[in-house]
Image (cartoon, rainbow, N blue to C red; front, side):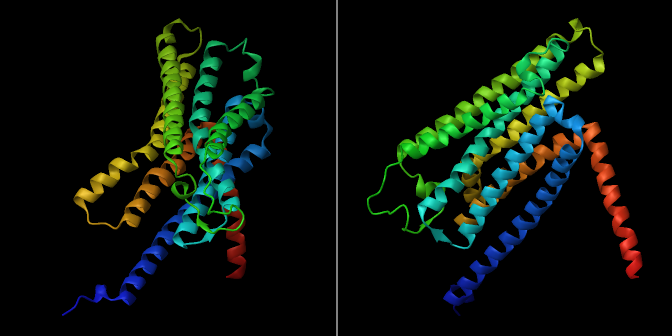
Amino acid sequence: MQNLTEFPGNATSHKSLSVIIKVCVVIPFFCVFLCCIGVMLHIFASHRQFLDTSRYILFAYMLINDTLQLLSSVLLFLFVMGQVKFAMVYCVPLLFISTATFQNTPLILATMSLERYVAIFYPLQRPAAWRSDRIWVIVFSLGLISCTPPLIDHAIREHDPAVDVFSTPLACKANVVNSSPIQTLFKASMSILFFAVVAVIILFTYVRILLETRNLRQDGASVSKAMHTVLLHGFQLLLSMMAFTSPITETLIVLHVDWLPQDIAFFNYFCFMLIPRFLSPLIYGFRDQILRGYIRKTFLCCSKKVKPHIRGKL
């Protein structure tokens, strides 16, 4: 008897079910992320003390950056799942935002580590650039640096005469729009450079704080907290670097599990792109005692507003 899965109708049905399951996994996950980030950004906007502190400004910038990264990433994921094709002129900006925000994350982590270093070693004579009213210059510089590689990547793209930028429909994927070998080499080089520089900065700040702990005339609690914060930034960097492990994981999965290529790609996307981006800001945000207190108060206020409304209906 012929296997039922060999019929085209069953194959199409299985593929549609797989797409529905993947979308139903990603969308709620992303909505929870947006809810948590929205609460944190609302707290920052509602309390002036956060906007007067450099490290909270940098953290808010990281939240906005990761939100843009995940939003563009999820949109690209939905377009691929729905097999939506459109002109390159609409696809390139989306890919640009995704790439720029991805490369901006390690830069923000390095800057946050340096901010802790400056706060510990120069508590009374902090350089002007690291003050809360000047930190916006650093924020703007980080955005400018992270946008430069995608611009260069697009500039060196080999233009296909058969593809009209304004009308030819294409699948909005990085390997479709940016497919030349020189672009692949350039992107790999930039990613390695970004993460290597950030790793050196985080390691330097951690070792310096560790070695100078006994010589500092500050309470041990603040120094210890700064060390743990820098160590946390290193962990966040490792989470971000997990995106580069996809070739290794693909090889291991193929050797041990009989999965379809699209299922392997989804596994890598969910485990090594979505989850690290989701965990990174939440770990840092809920670890901060002051911010955690405001988050607790926000959810308590929301629950108190909902309970009378429910009782009124009953």
